Image (cartoon, rainbow, N blue to C red):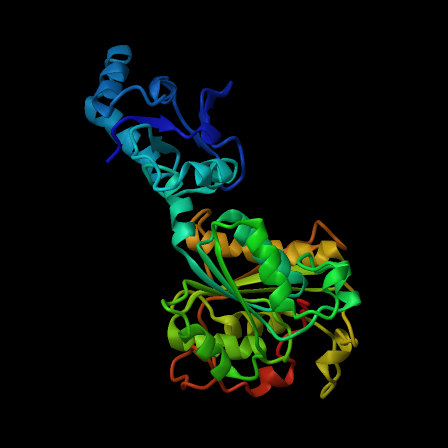
Amino acid sequence: MLVRPRVKPEHSGYRAKDGTVRLGSVVYGIGVEIEDPDGWVWTLVDAMDGTRTVPELAELVCGAHPQVSVADAAGAVAALYEAGHLEDADAPAPDLTAREQERYSRGVPLLRWLDRTPRRSAWQMQEDLRRSRVLLVGLGGTGGYAAQALVASGVGHLRCVDPDTVGLSNLNRQPLYRERDIGRSKAEAAEEDLRALNSDVEVTCERRLVEGPGDVADLLGSGAEPYDLLLMCADEPPEVRRWTNQACLESGTRWVDGGYRGPVTTAGVYVPGTGGCWECVRTSEINRRDLGLAPGQDPAVASPRRPWNPVTAVTAGMSGLLVAHAAITLLTGAPPLEPGVMFGINLGALDDPVLLRSPRQPDCPACGTGAGPAVDAGAIARQRPDDRTTG
């Protein structure tokens, strides 16, 4: 219940020349236009500065516009709150230290801007991040940028897993490592870097190889408490995303993956029971492609693998930050994100963004009707599990 409502600073409104009231800083997906032929909506919006209660606001509007009822004015306040444009000036102080409030004082306003969920204070989202537990597999380029972003943003606990050591060729796109780290375990070097970035976050890193779906399930079940989210940022073995999909479906764990294929950087978001799983989205991606292949021709010829994938700090960084954005979205609800989606950017053609959604497919071998506990890869596996790279 709002006590003293105010328009979020980032949603600060104005009255356009056509008389409509505009909120949300005219950002697509957030901004709204409200018809206001009689001017009373603007009177209400302009008065919501956090100094008045809802009854006081209704009285002010009715005094200036006698044709408006108290119920209409109060209803407009409720509608704007439900639409995510208001907060409460009387909301309780955040359950965060003064140090944490200063550290996150620039990030919380962005969450508030993106947020479309009715809540009294945007600091609730930062509190949600501090309570969160995230498992990240793969500390290469994608995983390194994602880990840094999440630790800087204030996740409560981040556990990272990677089997490799640092090599010189890693340093063009893997931000957690320095020349002095060459030959060191990535897990050891990453833990040192991440802890130095934010001592308020609990960071643990482990040198470990994932060799099958049982390993993913074991990682998910090995924490003192369940993980809120898994981030799959590894690209080896090639089947690792299929294993992750299977383990997350069985445990009910939300997960995100990401990577790059040359100039195309992407992230995918999956929530068991809501929207398509990784298999559903991957099948939709394969089906929409028109590769022009001859009968029996290997799909790999259209996107051949090399011993290493062309990558810079830019493409690795973009994929990792897309993963971090998706993670923060799932953990806070800002902005709302429908799962069963892959999204990204094509640096070779900025007018060709990546956005692929898939509902849950009834015939999906992983999550469809009649799917068994193990994933039957079938023909999809023979068309290559994934052709994105994350390292």
